[in-house]
Length: 228
Image (tube, rainbow, N blue to C red; front, top):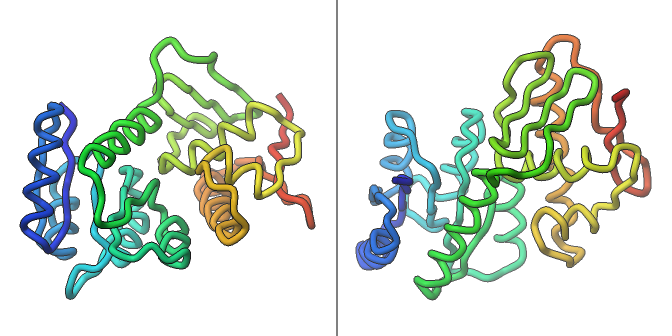
Protein backbone atom coordinates (compact mmCIF):
# COMPACT_ATOMS: atom_id res chain seq x y z
CA UNK A 1 0.00 0.00 0.00
CA UNK A 2 1.49 3.33 -1.09
CA UNK A 3 1.73 5.93 1.67
CA UNK A 4 1.04 9.57 0.87
CA UNK A 5 1.64 12.66 3.03
CA UNK A 6 -0.93 15.43 2.54
CA UNK A 7 0.24 18.78 3.92
CA UNK A 8 -2.35 21.57 3.88
CA UNK A 9 -3.54 23.99 6.57
CA UNK A 10 -7.18 23.68 5.42
CA UNK A 11 -8.86 20.78 7.23
CA UNK A 12 -11.61 20.40 4.63
CA UNK A 13 -9.12 20.04 1.80
CA UNK A 14 -7.09 17.43 3.71
CA UNK A 15 -10.24 15.46 4.49
CA UNK A 16 -11.43 15.62 0.87
CA UNK A 17 -8.08 14.51 -0.50
CA UNK A 18 -7.83 11.75 2.10
CA UNK A 19 -11.27 10.42 1.22
CA UNK A 20 -10.56 10.18 -2.49
CA UNK A 21 -7.08 8.71 -2.04
CA UNK A 22 -8.22 6.12 0.48
CA UNK A 23 -10.97 5.03 -1.93
CA UNK A 24 -8.17 4.23 -4.39
CA UNK A 25 -6.30 2.13 -1.82
CA UNK A 26 -3.70 4.63 -0.66
CA UNK A 27 -2.68 5.12 2.96
CA UNK A 28 -2.84 8.82 3.89
CA UNK A 29 -1.07 10.78 6.62
CA UNK A 30 -2.13 14.41 7.24
CA UNK A 31 0.04 17.37 8.23
CA UNK A 32 -1.55 20.70 9.18
CA UNK A 33 1.51 22.80 8.38
CA UNK A 34 4.98 22.68 6.88
CA UNK A 35 6.79 22.05 10.14
CA UNK A 36 4.64 18.97 10.82
CA UNK A 37 5.25 17.76 7.27
CA UNK A 38 9.03 17.98 7.71
CA UNK A 39 8.77 16.17 11.03
CA UNK A 40 6.85 13.29 9.43
CA UNK A 41 9.34 13.12 6.56
CA UNK A 42 12.26 12.90 8.97
CA UNK A 43 10.70 9.90 10.74
CA UNK A 44 8.78 7.98 8.09
CA UNK A 45 9.02 6.86 4.49
CA UNK A 46 6.44 8.23 2.06
CA UNK A 47 5.85 7.32 -1.58
CA UNK A 48 4.55 10.79 -2.49
CA UNK A 49 3.91 14.19 -0.90
CA UNK A 50 1.00 16.51 -1.71
CA UNK A 51 2.13 19.93 -0.56
CA UNK A 52 0.13 23.16 -0.28
CA UNK A 53 2.24 26.21 -1.12
CA UNK A 54 0.49 28.80 1.03
CA UNK A 55 0.72 27.31 4.52
CA UNK A 56 1.42 29.64 7.45
CA UNK A 57 4.80 29.73 9.22
CA UNK A 58 6.63 27.15 7.06
CA UNK A 59 5.27 27.40 3.52
CA UNK A 60 5.31 24.77 0.78
CA UNK A 61 8.29 26.28 -1.02
CA UNK A 62 10.37 26.00 2.15
CA UNK A 63 9.28 22.42 2.73
CA UNK A 64 10.07 21.44 -0.87
CA UNK A 65 13.48 23.09 -0.68
CA UNK A 66 14.26 21.27 2.57
CA UNK A 67 13.14 17.91 1.18
CA UNK A 68 15.47 18.24 -1.80
CA UNK A 69 18.29 19.57 0.39
CA UNK A 70 18.08 16.28 2.29
CA UNK A 71 18.45 14.40 -1.02
CA UNK A 72 15.04 12.86 -0.47
CA UNK A 73 13.81 11.77 -3.94
CA UNK A 74 10.15 11.46 -2.87
CA UNK A 75 7.81 12.74 -5.63
CA UNK A 76 6.07 16.03 -4.81
CA UNK A 77 2.81 17.43 -6.13
CA UNK A 78 2.22 21.05 -5.17
CA UNK A 79 -1.17 22.62 -4.53
CA UNK A 80 -1.49 26.33 -5.16
CA UNK A 81 -4.39 28.76 -5.10
CA UNK A 82 -2.47 30.91 -7.56
CA UNK A 83 -2.12 29.96 -11.19
CA UNK A 84 0.59 32.50 -11.95
CA UNK A 85 3.42 31.23 -14.11
CA UNK A 86 6.03 32.37 -11.58
CA UNK A 87 4.54 30.07 -8.92
CA UNK A 88 4.70 27.09 -11.25
CA UNK A 89 8.24 27.93 -12.30
CA UNK A 90 9.48 28.29 -8.72
CA UNK A 91 7.81 25.06 -7.64
CA UNK A 92 9.33 23.12 -10.52
CA UNK A 93 12.75 24.66 -9.99
CA UNK A 94 12.71 23.61 -6.34
CA UNK A 95 12.13 20.01 -7.39
CA UNK A 96 8.36 19.52 -7.50
CA UNK A 97 7.17 16.91 -10.00
CA UNK A 98 3.74 18.35 -10.74
CA UNK A 99 1.32 21.00 -9.51
CA UNK A 100 -2.44 21.39 -9.25
CA UNK A 101 -4.18 24.77 -9.07
CA UNK A 102 -6.97 25.30 -6.53
CA UNK A 103 -9.89 24.86 -6.77
CA UNK A 104 -9.19 21.42 -8.19
CA UNK A 105 -11.09 18.27 -9.03
CA UNK A 106 -10.26 15.52 -6.50
CA UNK A 107 -10.49 12.99 -9.33
CA UNK A 108 -7.91 14.94 -11.33
CA UNK A 109 -5.61 15.05 -8.31
CA UNK A 110 -5.92 11.28 -7.86
CA UNK A 111 -5.14 10.79 -11.55
CA UNK A 112 -2.04 12.96 -11.22
CA UNK A 113 -0.96 11.06 -8.11
CA UNK A 114 -1.21 7.78 -10.01
CA UNK A 115 0.67 9.21 -13.00
CA UNK A 116 3.53 10.55 -10.87
CA UNK A 117 3.80 7.29 -8.92
CA UNK A 118 3.78 5.33 -12.17
CA UNK A 119 6.62 7.43 -13.56
CA UNK A 120 8.64 7.34 -10.36
CA UNK A 121 8.09 3.63 -9.80
CA UNK A 122 9.14 2.45 -13.25
CA UNK A 123 7.42 -0.08 -15.47
CA UNK A 124 7.89 -3.81 -15.14
CA UNK A 125 9.30 -5.60 -18.19
CA UNK A 126 10.45 -2.24 -19.52
CA UNK A 127 13.42 -1.36 -21.72
CA UNK A 128 16.84 -2.88 -21.20
CA UNK A 129 19.30 -1.54 -18.67
CA UNK A 130 21.53 1.24 -20.04
CA UNK A 131 25.25 0.96 -19.26
CA UNK A 132 27.76 3.70 -20.09
CA UNK A 133 31.28 4.23 -18.77
CA UNK A 134 30.59 3.45 -15.10
CA UNK A 135 26.96 4.58 -15.26
CA UNK A 136 24.10 2.06 -14.98
CA UNK A 137 20.45 3.07 -15.47
CA UNK A 138 17.81 0.43 -14.73
CA UNK A 139 14.38 1.51 -16.08
CA UNK A 140 12.50 -1.26 -14.27
CA UNK A 141 13.54 0.05 -10.84
CA UNK A 142 14.63 3.57 -11.90
CA UNK A 143 17.86 2.84 -10.08
CA UNK A 144 20.98 4.78 -11.08
CA UNK A 145 24.50 3.74 -10.14
CA UNK A 146 27.82 5.45 -10.84
CA UNK A 147 30.92 3.29 -10.36
CA UNK A 148 28.79 0.89 -8.33
CA UNK A 149 27.44 3.59 -6.01
CA UNK A 150 23.71 4.28 -5.95
CA UNK A 151 22.78 7.88 -6.78
CA UNK A 152 19.44 9.06 -5.40
CA UNK A 153 17.62 11.13 -8.02
CA UNK A 154 14.22 12.77 -7.94
CA UNK A 155 11.73 11.53 -10.56
CA UNK A 156 12.37 14.52 -12.81
CA UNK A 157 16.16 14.24 -12.47
CA UNK A 158 15.92 10.58 -13.42
CA UNK A 159 13.66 11.35 -16.39
CA UNK A 160 16.10 13.98 -17.67
CA UNK A 161 19.03 11.59 -17.42
CA UNK A 162 17.15 8.72 -19.02
CA UNK A 163 15.81 10.77 -21.93
CA UNK A 164 19.28 12.00 -22.80
CA UNK A 165 21.00 8.66 -22.17
CA UNK A 166 18.69 6.96 -24.66
CA UNK A 167 20.26 9.11 -27.40
CA UNK A 168 23.96 9.61 -26.55
CA UNK A 169 25.54 12.40 -28.54
CA UNK A 170 22.23 13.97 -29.51
CA UNK A 171 21.84 17.63 -28.60
CA UNK A 172 18.54 18.44 -26.89
CA UNK A 173 17.24 21.99 -26.72
CA UNK A 174 15.72 23.17 -23.46
CA UNK A 175 12.33 23.27 -25.16
CA UNK A 176 12.63 19.61 -26.18
CA UNK A 177 13.64 18.51 -22.68
CA UNK A 178 10.89 20.57 -21.11
CA UNK A 179 8.26 18.95 -23.30
CA UNK A 180 9.63 15.39 -22.99
CA UNK A 181 10.10 15.46 -19.22
CA UNK A 182 7.49 17.94 -17.95
CA UNK A 183 5.07 18.14 -20.84
CA UNK A 184 5.20 21.94 -20.85
CA UNK A 185 6.11 23.76 -24.02
CA UNK A 186 6.09 27.47 -23.18
CA UNK A 187 9.12 29.68 -22.92
CA UNK A 188 8.65 30.91 -19.35
CA UNK A 189 9.70 27.62 -17.75
CA UNK A 190 12.85 26.85 -19.74
CA UNK A 191 15.07 27.86 -16.83
CA UNK A 192 13.53 24.93 -14.93
CA UNK A 193 15.58 22.64 -17.18
CA UNK A 194 18.82 24.45 -16.29
CA UNK A 195 18.08 24.16 -12.57
CA UNK A 196 17.45 20.41 -12.77
CA UNK A 197 20.47 19.80 -15.00
CA UNK A 198 22.67 21.60 -12.46
CA UNK A 199 21.26 19.50 -9.63
CA UNK A 200 21.62 16.28 -11.64
CA UNK A 201 25.25 17.01 -12.53
CA UNK A 202 26.05 17.78 -8.90
CA UNK A 203 24.67 14.45 -7.70
CA UNK A 204 26.44 12.42 -10.39
CA UNK A 205 29.76 14.19 -9.78
CA UNK A 206 29.73 13.38 -6.06
CA UNK A 207 30.91 9.86 -6.89
CA UNK A 208 34.74 9.76 -7.01
CA UNK A 209 36.05 9.26 -10.54
CA UNK A 210 32.71 9.93 -12.22
CA UNK A 211 32.97 11.34 -15.75
CA UNK A 212 30.97 14.40 -16.75
CA UNK A 213 28.06 12.70 -18.45
CA UNK A 214 26.06 15.80 -19.36
CA UNK A 215 27.68 18.36 -21.62
CA UNK A 216 26.42 21.90 -22.25
CA UNK A 217 26.19 22.89 -25.89
CA UNK A 218 26.34 26.66 -25.58
CA UNK A 219 23.48 28.52 -27.21
CA UNK A 220 21.59 25.29 -27.91
CA UNK A 221 21.05 22.97 -24.94
CA UNK A 222 22.54 19.77 -23.52
CA UNK A 223 23.73 16.34 -24.60
CA UNK A 224 24.66 13.06 -22.96
CA UNK A 225 28.19 12.10 -23.98
CA UNK A 226 30.26 9.15 -22.74
CA UNK A 227 32.13 6.13 -23.99
CA UNK A 228 29.81 3.16 -24.06
